[in-house]
Image 1 (tube, helix red, strand yellow):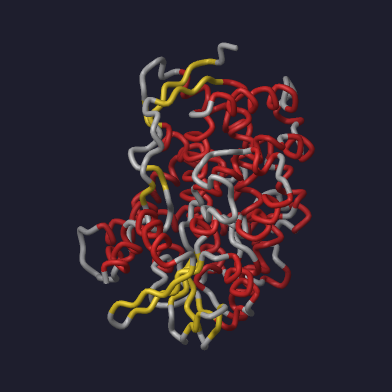
Image 2 (cartoon, one colour):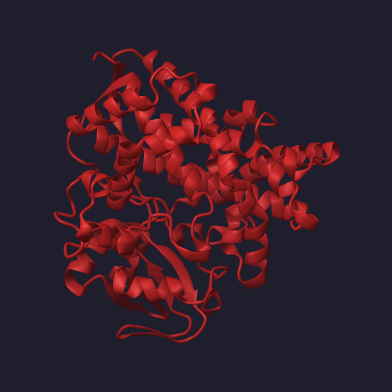
Length: 437
């Protein structure tokens, strides 16, 4: 029971201790609950290759359903999942991703300008980064329709987002008023009024898929009206929630690691000067992102050490075998990119931050990347917005390195906290100044 409590309240140190004792894949039992922790790539490969009908995502332990709604793709199974994801996936086509590049860069510049107004005082960059991510997500989802209401929508949703990252045991359903769950319900009702109003406005405008410039337009234009109004609402909340907390966490850890390593920040700056230069924001395109190879490697190395999702749960719908491990029907399977990204037999000095692993991988490191780097998941249940998240983190990191100096107030790497989203304890306390060299 102690292990179960640790996994649901303080997962990173608990996983470190359990992996040291039992190896990267092991079974934990406590009362009626059985969990299989899977972190060995030899077991991850067959697990993620197993057909999805062997698992359930809409199980009783998936507390995200309260936030994202019953029609969300991330709490759906079978044909419902295929239909909902299939109707949403085209929204993230390459042509749309490239069109969002100026949005990301302009919001990064806005972040820089607002930050520099703070002067030399130390502050926590984590909530500032969350504001940046929220603005990008809302503009990508809603374009000009709700782009100017990003801060309003974020403020309305914040109690629900805060509630959703609590340990599962603190999210047990109840109807009681004046509680965090009650405040989250009220927050979701406020967000719903904004989202449904925008859906109705766009339906009256009757745009086609060729006109779709943002995610909401693309979902509304899905062939045959594949999604109902409530399902579009649920996908919208899902994409806000998934793109908000996880990307905010990724940005926080990446800035901590990169700004805390002077040679890395210097190399990022040199690349940004070469690739971004003085090109007007509106003219930046997909070729720009592909040219930021070192910034991409820095992000990937940070996500290896600090994947926003410490583990991803699914429930076995039938008996399975993973190597020598017998997984019984009903077992909660927690596969862990955190464990896979820190195995000493795969990664040289795995706790060291070394972007060169991804910038210049040798044969051994490339094999580790292919088999054990999976912060966005893999297969048909992988993060639907992974390309947007990677592009957002890469561009923001490059632009920040190009424009500002960041000094960490604390040199030590903070403790990771959070069950659903792994974020740095005590935030990212920094001093930021205009670039001096």
